[in-house]
Length: 265
Image 1 (tube, one colour):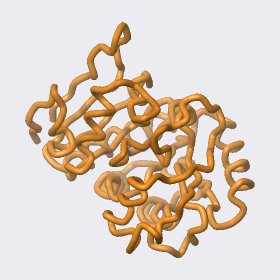
Image 2 (cartoon, helix red, strand yellow):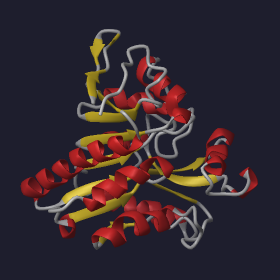
Image 3 (cartoon, helix red, strand yellow):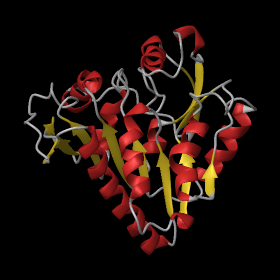
Image 4 (cartoon, rainbow, N blue to C red):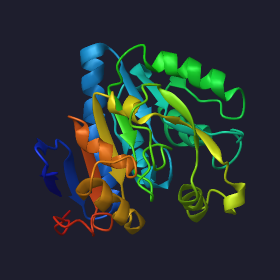
């Protein structure tokens, strides 16, 4: 594993830690080890760990590894939903509620979780969950980076100003095509045009952020997010302003980084 910090951006030194692993499996395990340690620490400090959980194909290996780690008191973990499609029932294969149930909640026995109801009253749901989310600080957020550098479902240009916890957003064509390419939908027309997304600033309010980004198809977005300007046109670039964020890459997703080095196991 190779670890480094993002370098100076103008007159500001970034705090984002970069860890490059050989492949998505060793990446997933390394990220899971850090996540488990952080969850245990939060439980020791506060009696509960409040976490935000990401979904999508990029999180498969990470969640598999995390849910297999012993000695995590999942009864003291509270989970918040990062995003959800509007108009998609929980029974649909692409539902993020279904994803979290199958890949995290049912595997661990978590009982404290807050789901965004995208196929019901979306505005009521985001207001209720947002109020509960802001009741206490979030200890740990798991996020990915989209092929268009989206953060959650904040596609470019993302709203870097709002303090609302959740937003109803329009999904751009690149984001919708990614969902088809990953096999969640048969065509772009099948992908909902809108979603509920946690806002950028709400994600940044988390005490710690772990970013899991494997695969060659994410390489350009990773390069833009880590080496380009911090801008709403590259939503994930805002992660460089967080004081305690770690991004896990494999050799494919790190391939275009100017400062990249070969991954080791």
